[in-house]
Amino acid sequence: MRLVSAPPSLPIPSTTQEEIRVRFDRLTPKQREVCLLMVGGTMNKNIADQLGMSINTVKTHRNEIFRKMGASSLLELVRQIDHLRSVRDAEEPAPPQSSPGQEPLRETEPRGLRVIVVEDHAALREAIVNGLNALGHQARGAEDGAALDRELVLAPADIVVLDIGLGRYRENGFSIAARLRRQVRCGIVMVTARGELDARIRGLEEGADAYLVKPIDFVELSAVMNSVMRRMQPVSPAA
Image (cartoon, rainbow, N blue to C red; front, side, top):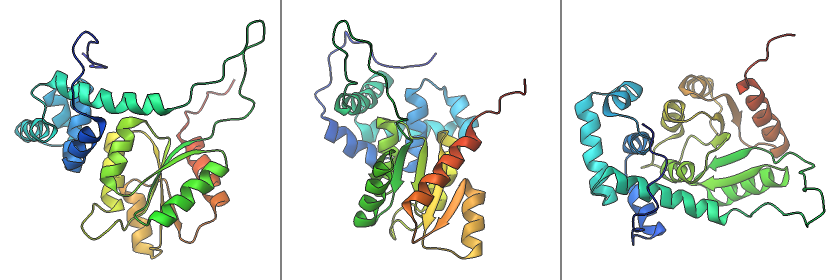
């Protein structure tokens, strides 16, 4: 059974979106993985199999998730995550409506890729986001792995642009790439100042689809992202 959303007849919790965000950020990366599988309706045994851990470890993570999120039941936890997602949906502009008697409006250009840029340097992160948006993509930023996880809860991504060094006491890009491969289906493009061969090889082995060394050109980055997406598409059988 898959839990998609909580029944609308139940009262909406008084917990604010910001409080839920703060609580979600307190989860460890592994606890966030377990949390997202839990609210998707995955059973303990399947979670253990997917994440390569024992059922007892999954139960320990579940208890910590409930404690940190302040949830007394799985249903309440689902409602909290749905609350975060509903806020993002409400913030997205509605598509333009056609007037009566007119043909429905159609998009004449592709909407581009949904991109999350994970970069701890605020000015550089903003520059990459703005550069990709100017090229027609839908980019948003995240300063570290915790912020990335929150963004993925709010809305999915086609591509994650990922730096390696995200601060001394934060999860590094290698670790994030490895767990993204287990957690979601998206392209991963590493963009980092580390150009040595060992780092490039490790990045690709941990799950990156492409590895670029700073400084980068936004047009090149866009082309690499599009190339990654084409490789991810299933190949149609020849006629």
